[in-house]
Image 1: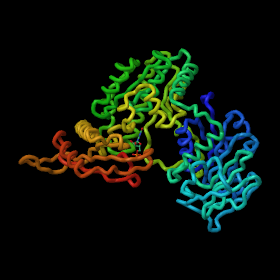
Image 2 (image 1 turned 135 degrees about the vertical axis):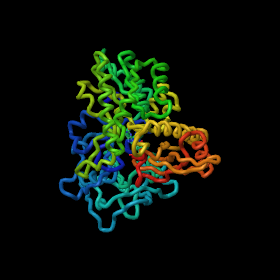
Image 3 (image 1 turned 30 degrees about the horizontal axis):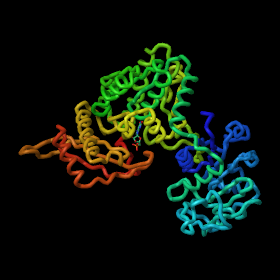
Length: 519
Ligand code: XMP
């Protein structure tokens, strides 16, 4: 936890969109953290010392006995509080108002709020058109506001859409300002943090300096190992660590033989030659490809790669003398302990590749300099550290690599074809200036051969599929709408330039129902 920033606390009641509140605030250069309601007691509040508090939405009903509440100490803590949806309702209930369920006043989706009783600072700039669109999602509603509160905005089904007790700096809204369907939502947050007196001191330059100091304090003169994958997170982790501790850092890059064309060489060049970082580059492709021989089940592939990766990484890490720390590029979304109301772990669609259990197994302590950052903040930090823009903007690449883009059995022949086809496809996308519009694009090689005709001869070669999606976080995705012209040109280039391919498919599947990767 970096202490010197002004801090805002988000108390999480389990809304699906709590993380978006944090995103909106970080965009305003305000440092905030999300903590579940059941971890925030009076002592926590005092220790965290927030300059303002936001109560998130949530799926429960404040009318249910035993439902979540904000800590009582909050109401006398003396900082501005903003309650959103469930947060608004618990605020009202706890301060002496009334909340009721249903009775035909549930509201889901778009609604329009109109002003009441004059101006309210958090709504500055809102009502130029007389009313403003917001996004509602509530079954319960406030039926009586708490003493001291005044209504400042109403919607057809929420007479108390915006209320406030200005003297105590308590603000409550029934809608969700954090979602894009509330177009002026960001303005509302901006107004709120301005009235709370935030200076906006959360910048990447400041973060870089403090993170470097924090790494030095944590690590002392010990040695640190960092696994490099070539992705943005591990690369930024390594460069930040190198800036903090120089030669006390050794990176390990395992080439499992399932990387994209030239990827291993590019990673080595960038880190060893450009950044002069100590790097063990381990070509273990034979080991992985031999272990994958004859394996076609997607989960067996993933588990085989995951287990071998840990073994191999450990083997190289053990050669590094005096290492006491393992660096990981853990990001804030992985750290947030959001409230789960489902009561159990969600279904495993794919077992993800990670090195979760490694530190305990190796007796190493963890250093995680990105654990306070969102993905786009990591990119901003990468830019601050001077990483090339083309590198920072790279599409995500999965841990198991090309293995999951080669459904069925993996062979060296298929991998070589896939690497070439993918390189041509990505080159095409770059040449047309589309790379940055696409969240992820890749080729896959399908487990079949088909008949074709080239020149005067019959061919019997592999089929390749090409995929491109837009997405915000990889959880859902839409197919990128290439033009027919682009697709035709890409098909021609792949078949002409890649030996062994005579057919190209364009994957139109969104997620859901598909996943982004083929396995
Ligand atoms: P799916 O295929 O589940 O992928 O829709 C969502 C996003 O996650 C990436 N992905 C992985 N990333 N290890 C990773 O580091 C994995 O095992 C893994 N599997 C999928 C995928 O590339 C997409 O961006």
